[in-house]
Image (cartoon, rainbow, N blue to C red; front, side, top):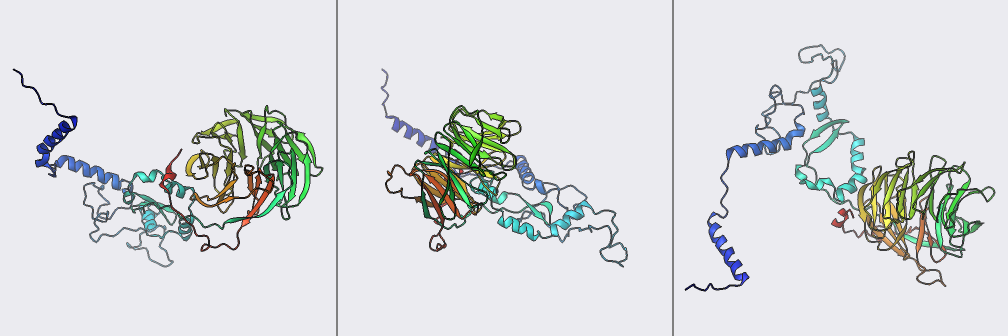
Length: 512
């Protein structure tokens, strides 16, 4: 007769199994594993090679100059070979004794050429130059952001990192424990305040450009006009009519007395400001033209359109030099610069493309954004740029578009970006908010939501374009309540009245 097996719950069975395992191994708990001499030696040898490999080429002590450095040599706690009263053999780095009238003896050996070891050991003894120390102290740009936003360095513990020091201009590798990376503190920027509201347009103000002389600025609007305003007084100087639909982009040339405009009527016009007349049309786009930019050094105009292309035009001959194809949706923004890549476009297909102007082909495609890229801005001093999208503002490094960091927090459709030399980045959004950021750290130091013009609906609160004037003391925004608002820095603000309330986020390391 078979005995019936008692049935237990899974929980009980699992618990019993755990107890059996515990009882079996409890006697061996915390016992050290017996040391295998051969594997230990091999492990230590590999460790020593890894730690001290980069410094094996340094000037060797007198005693060990003849023999190769043995990885099993004893190393003291400071990480260097024990000295035993040995000194560095510092040989002269000049072919002759340093002063006239010094006899050539065995002590002052005549050398035909300075020895390599002599040069290196002299370099060891030389202090770093003042200029280099200053540069190291103040150089806190892209490299800093990379390090603090979580770069490759985080994969190693800081105390085992080998740093490449430069002493007196000579490169030599020194075993110095690098300081653990810390987030750089944001630079303090005074807050900006609204000081002028200019009304005059009868429709949304879609675009702004400031002329190179900083005397006046120009705006394009949904009322189909282009207006020129005096920058100092805010008075209207001139209205230009000719477009038959919204004017989406304006640009003033620094090389000739020309103003360029583009609009939803597919037209790109060149205005001669001496006669205030259209002198050229650039035909070719198949749909609304959303933005345009002038190349800073050659007579070339680049426009981008809802037909998913950007076009490069010869200003003088009106020839379509290149049609930059590759985007799969509206190209919303375009920027030009002197250095490669000379053209940058952002599109509703969520990508940013960097273009080779000579070949007319894509150099790189940046696919990190999840939503439409409507704004791109180039930093005036650094070789970097930023792009704005509803998911994030991202900073990138030229020439290949390496990602630097995210600026998160402006949760709206970002229509426009502007940046000045002080490192103030401005983002303007569809809901009427303006956020001001510290470029280097991504700290959001101010948020502005200006009231709409009396008589407008609250929903008519939107920023379509913003730009700094050339003195960088004024910020001009183009808005959906048909006004142009001008902001300036608050002179009365100090670090005490407006302190930096900064809490670094580790989330910055996110790439997407």
